[in-house]
Image 1: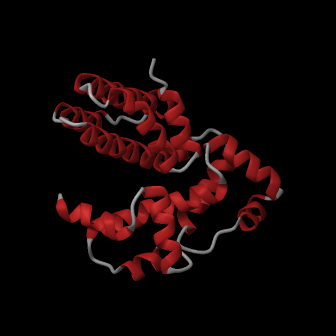
Image 2: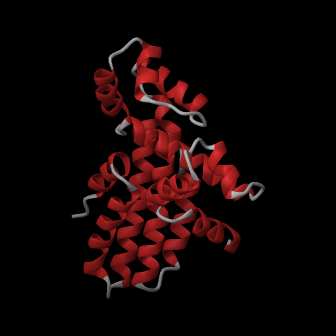
Length: 210
């Protein structure tokens, strides 16, 4: 029995690396069985697409269809794992874009403020004062409502924006780092790799290769 819910929890509450480690462990038993590898990825793709539809009313059918086509082209374990990483990466990116759908009004206000000021220095203290809440209560409420720690969500949002700028190909990494609110080039690179699964340079190469 596939435990896709566990993967979803890791995508929401952990780094991408933790989810990929789980994916690798779950695919390994089928390393010599192409049909089972494809079946696992197919079910994972459908599960994640359905999860976003039911939980957030977000329609990702087109993305799921693209992955379905790629799944049919898988021929080796290595290809299956790389595609699985892509699937996890793309769906994880959607968490940062749908969180404004949370019901709690205070967290909606916090998310809106973060969306508008992520390029600046944002602290828990700043946002808690804006909302007239204690830092501890906001920290607890934020994770309870979004599934993300406060600082983790800000980092995820910055990385998502950085990916868009890299895809546009107009700015240098130094400029992107500054624009997205990272404190330094090294902070940008380290955070990007943590949440995107690769360095900004590696991501740029992936984009150029498409």
